[in-house]
Length: 327
Image (tube, rainbow, N blue to C red; front, side, top):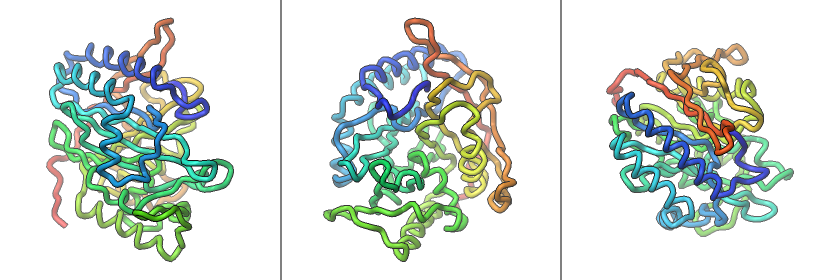
């Protein structure tokens, strides 16, 4: 998407209109055959209420009744006619809780007219836990939330990641590959947000790693927030996306993002996708390669005045399946 998830924050009416234009372009692809899923960036929609303060069932109810839901379900209904069982994965953020603490960074998955997947960010990045802006806080129940896992039309099991959660996937191999120092603030059920002590972090990471071991996904879908321009995503591609594939036995890792200044105009630019990355990649440090997979096609989405507002990138990922889910 052209633009950003913040400064200025997205307006719901504009994002609904863009979702409708994306849907129109997707419907024109009927001849290519089944499409399993469509991934939107992080923070595509913005809510006023902070849902992380609520129990999980109340969060889901609030999402089902939020302003973007009618538009999401309308788009899904149209797409289901051409691509039965398609999954829409869309990032939804909220406004800040107050001047000190941030709100939510969430990923939602919608399928056959229903909300079927939900993840709230469990791994902040270091820029989100300093006092320059409201600080990101986590909740322990979001680490191993079963709704992170979504079964796609093709029977693959996808794990939903809210932006830097993609880097957290590397903890499946070793906790040192996750940025534990950025997990600074936590809110436990019925309690206020508090400082999260360093001695508590290993159990948090192990809870996440145990979840990944118990439910090994077949692919990961990462709703990334934004980059300044194509080419500024190299760190993410090498260390985040390729690193996650290496940590999870080479499964495909797909990302979608906003680009603030201009969009990728060629297939080989900013793919944000990797697969079949060897485990050794994780131990190569600054010498890690990008291991990109390039889209088959780029499909521009134009505004009413003819400007490109988004680019749909079509990927066909042939990965070993079924995976062995044995311990």
